[in-house]
Image (cartoon, rainbow, N blue to C red):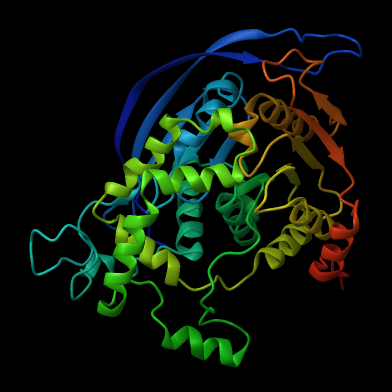
Length: 413
């Protein structure tokens, strides 16, 4: 049984006052600039104690309008959605939460203390503390975190939007608790996570592998400590992080020193190395991403897909596959944009979010745009556009991928 504590330990008003331009609707044909209303959004930071001694950090903006919850990808946190907090917070209630073991969400004490009290890493000791016996940084843990957050902090059904790993988790949560969501928006959602088979796998051989290999629970076993800590030290190097971002960011202007510093900062937490080791070895969830999509479709959960077209990791073929599983899901491609269109092309992305939310809040009376062009609506980045696409393969590569990946909806009954 999930045990959660809704106690808010800390809430402070951050000194982030941002003038946000709210573009409520696309302009009429031939109109170069949309009417806008400048509103000031205030971002507040909070810490929520979940389960035992796990402190979860989240940020909020807005006091009225539909509720939106954003879920970050691997290695980032609330800071990656500041453009959404500032802008969408003017007419929505917005939450962004750091996943446990990411950003500013960490255990408050060492879950497995080392005999040497000066040892710099948490979780590398001989045995787990009693309160940390079920601490695994896995999809199942994060899904439970989101479930508890929605049930005890937000306390109402929300629109759940996730980028990369956050998209995977949005599907996982909505498949488990469709009553907690009004809709799901996937932003270049990773379609797979973890490589160790689940001990609950339906395949007998996979179950045995999942039971034999370390499943990511603290403490980190002795054989994994040396390799994981050194791999972690290499991975969190600012140069390495910048190189990884350069692979997936199409808009290099958004790849700033500040972004790199924001990603590096949480890696200095003493629990970061053991969290990384746990993430690497944590087992797969019981249900795959595609199985989760099938459940969303069966439950009638509204789904929207917003993908950066130039993402070299989660290529458009993965969005097309999701579209085949849930055929009525609108599928937008944003270009030029890579793996993080909410950050690389935030103005167009925010307009799409507003349009999609309004479409559902008005029971379809507010139409979805077929195309948004930055030039026509007078945005700063005049190169970006977004198109509502069918999801059908457009070239030989996509046709081959479609045949390999499959993804047609299952017949009911």
